[in-house]
Length: 450
Image (spheres, rainbow, N blue to C red):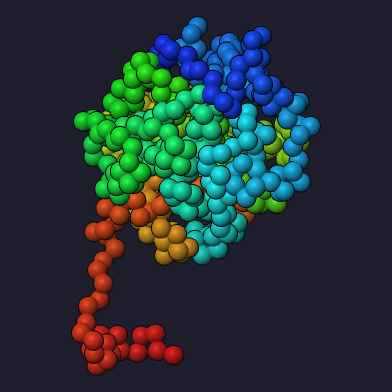
């Protein structure tokens, strides 16, 4: 990896106290686990830079080169245990793909997350000039109405296996909501750390579950730095710090589900919102894993990234032909994407290049218009990240990067009820009349008459 500013975003702290192993995974005297038949699917945690391998514990940074760690799987073992039939006969949740997720035991957390609708967006497609446009609608994910329910279900399941009793995270909002909800369901203590300027609905979406909510006077990057320091001092499962290698794998289910919902075919194009960049890279990884285990014949998907102009370090680097990015100070209504120093930015750039995809950004006004366009054409109310996705989709179509016949999936990752402030002043006001038929007829005349 080239020397870039991204290196500063990676915590080099490793927990000083190793967690004890809980009842779900007791260590035996010779160092083996009583869950070894399942654990064999996870070979190791491997550094994404130097490839040095580590045990599948609560580690996230390479001690040799400080690169990020990622789960390495035994695909030969998995291939013999997974098939289209076994998936289709599995639970109606993301856990139908358990063989390709980094957990060793029977899941007990997030049992209803995932398997959200893939909507054939005929109205929006007609407006944009696309025949085969689909919206992957995680606005209705369970339990907190965002894609973060996927990654948290995986992260806290693994955290429990590793013996943790306290869950925590650094968040721009959606992740905190999901961690708080899942920790409540799992009976875990919970601390969530958020910037002090989040949308009111997202703050309420934390407090209702009664975690310890800590507002930080600063942006997400300030929050993340503090959490990295705390993770080095306390035996807590920070889902996006020391548990990050497992947490990130949950995003792959957005690729798995789309392939299944398209009749076991990969899409031609995907448009993915980017904050840290992890979601985009894991969708790419998930597509290739299905090919590796024999479920998908080939992958020719172009992966396109979407950011808001007020926080677009990855998209800006791509448009300038660079394989590194410059951190920025976020200034956008798309607060769920407001990470100025994205941990996976370098890998997102690499993914777009490898897949033949593109990256674009949109203004805050274009974000609002994207939200409204999706709502009035498909009846889906997305948060600001969804407005970014739709706005960038529209740009890519105009540029000719996405063609009329391409099977295209736009990922909409969170519910608009969480970010009402972004559009409240741009959607107009209700008509107001007294309870009088005469007044109604005076205002609307023959509009809508049968």
